[in-house]
Image (cartoon, rainbow over all chains, first blue to last red):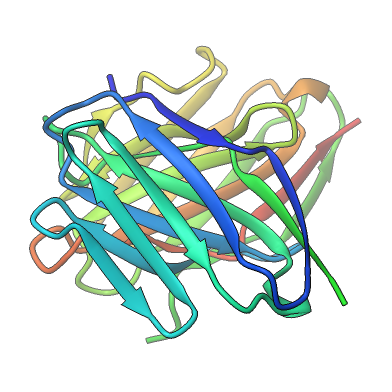
Length: 113
Length: 114
């Protein structure tokens, strides 16, 4: 089955700096890679996603890049703000059952004012 | 749509008791997922359904766990008998594969087994 590895497990930055979280996946047939943000005590919510026919996608201060050859994808947050502090999860779908998502272990991002 | 609805939000039960968690997916979604979240293991997929049919239950920890989806608008996850190590937040999520595969999560049920 799909295996998703996420790094780092914790990330601490100063407000205004950039933050980068990286994930690798094992199933070369995966074609959908979402990123979820989970604030303390709340549900995971989608912040951005990318499909395998696209190499990069941006939405205001967040962007995701995908390298299919290397089977890794990354989340980039620029001009970080304290409200960006949360746990971020990457995920990849299954190449045999596209509705199934496997999540990375999560990255605790702390943005210091 | 009100989103994915889970009940109860919190459940405290004694070891050995039966626990039933409930989920109402977003109308029209054809995939339903049950996840368990703990600090140690992160977000684990327990089981998922497609059009009410269980597709993959390989994540179900053991026979004490069972899940059903009798119709498109309702699913249950049952633990019998419950044990302290089952304490976790259980999320239900649904998605519409034909449109995209974004999974919408419910608010979760925080289960504490004492």
